Amino acid sequence: MSNNHLENLLLEINNEGIATLTINRPEKLNALNEQVLTELEKAISEVNKNRAIRVLIVTGAGEKAFVAGADIKELNTLNKISGEKLSSRGQQIFDAIENSRIPVIAVINGYALGGGAELAMACHIRIATDNAAIGLPEVSLGLIPGYGGTQRLPALVGKSKAMEMILTGKPIQADEAFRIGLVNRVLPADEAVPHALNLAATIMKNAPLAVAAAIEGVNASGSGNGFAREAMLFGRLCETEDFTEGTSAFLEKRKADFKGK
Ligand code: COA
Image (cartoon, rainbow, N blue to C red):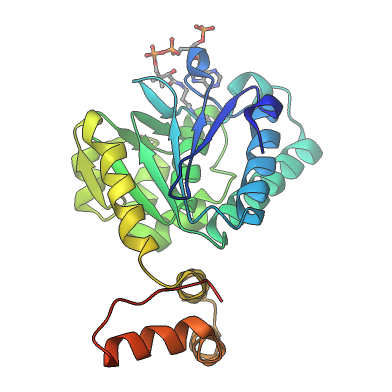
């Protein structure tokens, strides 16, 4: 996918197979309007189809915001039908991120509010810059989080803290987000992307099909059939070339050469 198709996103793919997707609407603090959502949907689908890409990093343009939420100008005109439709659509796009075959790392470089916090929560790993503020302020607009926030936040930080954040609508700072387990790491702004690239490189040393299955397994936790899914995925991996290669390489005391097969 080339950037020619994208007005509000930048997609860069490096030689090692790490893609970086930047929400690029800094004059509106990268707020998610209809067009950004559409482009995000397309980009996620294209990235997942591109076998050369092994890890995706998602971040926001500028120094102030990751994403300051859904576009409030567009929210203002919603009714019962269009509101439910928008919420379902946002959920579907963020589900595609959560269920992505490749790991998605959010670099939260500033405000991650409303839909921005929900986007970060749909990613698999979150790195925050030390100026990040994360919150779900929807009740202050007469709404509730609609892109999965009421479901993912309790899963990440527990019901009690999630209730507090959602009912007060007050954002928390990066250090507090780290303390409650909402983000994996807090770093100065100039160290966040390099750290995400290092994490990506570490993940990419592992067998790609196992990484994809691990995402599927972890995502199935709490679904009611997570253990059965884990056993099924485990068995399926036993038939892969990379499983034979990984276990043989260990026994032969050499580095595994994974092919993603
Ligand atoms: N939707 C639409 N526009 C937004 C936006 C959003 N969620 N968040 C910021 N913007 C726009 C502002 O309207 C402003 O546009 P303008 O220059 O045309 O007036 C521009 O982005 C810069 O924002 P501004 O409010 O001037 O920056 P600030 O530093 O004073 O405040 C925030 C930053 C994040 C605290 C503030 O923008 C804010 O509260 N945004 C809304 C957050 C929110 O409620 N998100 C949840 C939506 S569900």
